[in-house]
Length: 304
Ligand SMILES: Nc1ncnc2c1ncn2[C@@H]1O[C@H](COP(=O)(O)OP(=O)(O)OP(=O)(O)O)[C@@H](O)[C@H]1O
Image (tube, rainbow, N blue to C red; front, side, top):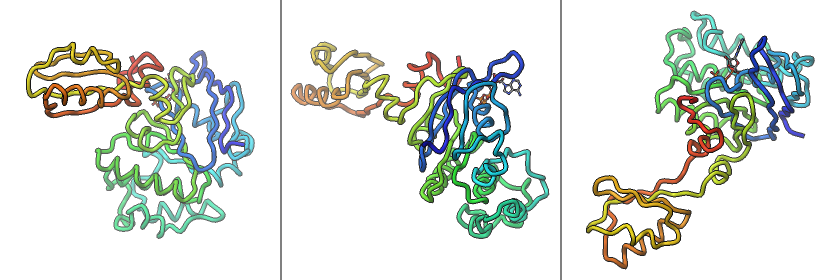
């Protein structure tokens, strides 16, 4: 049995269908991602898991519990990241952790958790004085204070700068290493690719695929692009004669060759035979964003 089981979840707000039909299973110890553009139904789905919303159809089980009817038991075992606005501005970091620890029968030690999350030096600071990254770490600490078996992290790194985002990713990997199963809601491809063991891609209230990041990419394409500047001119035919090559494009003095997984070796051998050096050689692999476009027919950024 999965730690989280969602089957044919359906949820409407009045006439508006937020979640059409969502099913997935999260196994123990995974970082499971829910990836989709704004309005895809991600937050509604996790709110149903947390017992905050009543599904209009389908079934949801978290740790074998029904979130609607076994809410108190679930609260003890599920860590939920709070939205920023839910903490009083003047509350100090240490006080917030002590307060939340008091809600649980067997909480983590607030001091140890602050040390682990790099919050010790701001323990006496008011929450509102913290940087975005520090606030995010407080919300992660609050999600972990009850020693949950499962943590739900929603849009964890939105609004953070790249360094703070990478620091947060490391932190999450540390949390998983302690055996906590993590459900991670995100619309950042890089985050999903870096952190998640498996991802459910959600679009317009439906799951369009569930797979590992590499599996999602492989499903849609095995394409690679080789980009370089030749030391002396080379005709397109040199490359198009190779079975691995699908397309040759030119951008000024640069050549971009698109082909299958073995295209790099084929291109470098043919260049070596022609005694041409490939300057500024780069290989680009299709990524999760290419997979997303292929699966949904639109880009994540615009949702168009
Ligand atoms: N309380 C609500 N009342 C009415 N419609 C809502 C409500 N909450 C969400 N919706 C609508 O339901 C759809 C799904 O929203 P949801 O917040 O679940 O998506 P999301 O994937 O989490 O998007 P985001 O990343 O923007 O939070 C959207 O079209 C949204 O406008």
